[in-house]
Image (cartoon, rainbow, N blue to C red; front, side, top):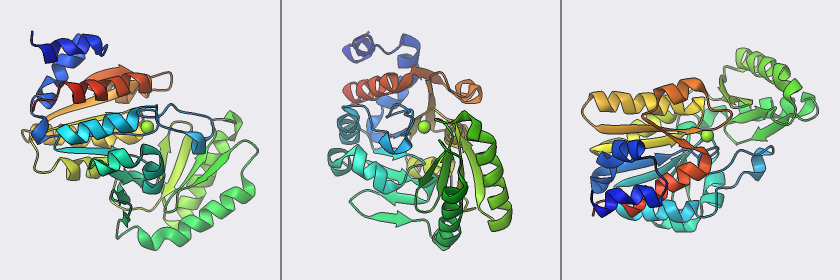
Length: 275
Ligand SMILES: [Mg+2]
């Protein structure tokens, strides 16, 4: 066993997971490391605005970006939110920030918007305004610019309102409804999701892994499967926790425990990357 391989013990990476991910770190210079934000880099909290990455997450991403061909945070959050909280060190090292499930792309301080999504800002704004006017106590309306998310984490009884509100808005406006952990989101009906983002980021490389915790990460896992069938080395890692969707765990090549486990995995991938 070489020193790099033994490092999984120091990083508390289960041996089987370390073995599965070996082909990623062994060709780091031709590999992508792609990571979700909420529930993966940051613990899930009641107020979505208060979510922050674990201490050291930005530095770990920066370390990865110095060793791997491509490193990105792929999230449902606005790119501006990711930029504010992932930090300049990571962005300066080349970490790509893919926000709003592929509708936004940020990196060097600027944010690019998907051309098909821009025309929907008025419909989203109107839906957000109406939601704020009628949301029951405890429900949180999260404005994200080109999308709006209705959360019921702090008020479980608001779930039926949120689901019905989103459905009726979708019927009326043409916006698309997407579910996530204790929330539902209205988004432009654009052909973009974490799967299209992952396929784009992995293009031209020989290996890619993705780490995520929610149903919105399933398209990323599916994209990896398709790339794997075409000959790329791909690994899907699920972040387990009390709310982890069973279908995500079932589709994963490996599992880590909570954001702490995900961060440890990223540190290990950086520390053991082949040079
Ligand atoms: Mg997540």
